Length: 587
View (cartoon, one colour):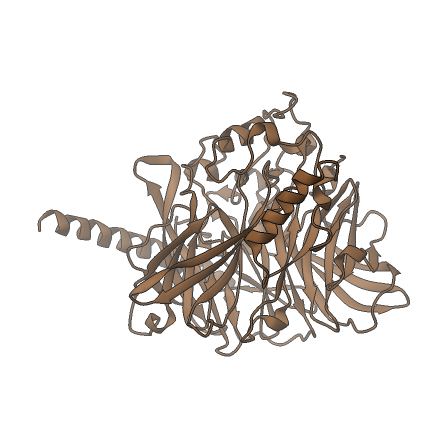
């Protein structure tokens, strides 16, 4: 299978008229925002690069829709353009210089009462104008945030890429991390102390340290319900060596998902720390879909998107070899993350009891399709998010399996992964395609998995990806087509827009949400030479308005406060830690 690797790192900017073919519904009129990285030549990891936002205006006119694209103008980006040789292009998470850590804001889009923010795991969030796509402001001065490492102008902030906006309270809830080297492995690994924060969109952030909790990984996604905040410990791991681009792998994460449960009633004004209760369940979780409302019994229901044998902080490098052929990778492969696994993807449905004296995992159900590998992005119907019944289904993207993308280094790091399902002899001799599927949440996933395995045993002649066609609604993409971003459109019967890479082309495919197997009902073709490359998460807005922002960070004052307040804050915190440890010694 030919992988469109040359199309992954291209970013076109401007306003474009895109041609629509097929049957475009008349009841679609909203807007989809998709974010992805903008790659400078020296930035090697595909996830590295300041955010680029792409807006798709879904109201078709004369067989065309309008598509807009603009790069985010972060303040460190000015210095990167002015003095590019002073910035070191580490593989992850961002570029480094004497001025500090680059802010990337390239991973997800968050809407907040008509306002639009770009987010990432590293750096502050940035607000953009939803109409013009111009950069407005970062969220907060650096001294308001939890600082992992000081910098002259741009200290290191470790964030969750997926905060949660709660419309009823008009609050954005997120999580920042205070990282330090693991003492027994200073160069290879960090541990992180999580801080939950709330922001009302116009004043300072309010933070609470989660007491007594150290994370091995990071909190890529924060889970917020009507009563609780769940802080996951997720396998996005890095050490100082990773940040600097050195080849010292971090310590392997704990082989189960660990979640720290905080009662929202504890997040009150006059406290600085909150207690948390720990729950665990099997597997490496990278994202979550959850019901905001608790069940009648008071339980939390969520779906964990899991995948073994991949590592998103690592990427193919110039001296890597292909695991199967032993040949070195061509330059166009360098920087492609280990986001394609050599094992089937896992979806795990979990019910959690959250009583103060009895917090535990009540039960889990596991969905595994033997031909669907590399769980990636997902979407769901946002009209169901705050309902009493919760979500009815998850729409999951499986990236596929590609022998051309498996390096020996990735294989060796995950060869003995405890969550791995298959052994080496069961790795297919051919590639597996991208798949878009709808998995109902009211079905018994254990039984569904058992039925798929039985069908595989009874019909070995069937293509692996086609198993379950009588039970599930899904679409298998043609050979050479790579499924990228995905977004549910909550209009009419519901639609799914996906972005697709093929050769050097970038397209949008529209599906009816209730009939994926019927294929795309319409396709969007960009003008020749226009390509947005590898993109990530997305968000839907019904309408757009450009308003005077109620919040603005002053650029000059931000630099002054970074030079003055951040060092004082860092030294004060370090002094408190030293004093506390000394007091323990003399007790």
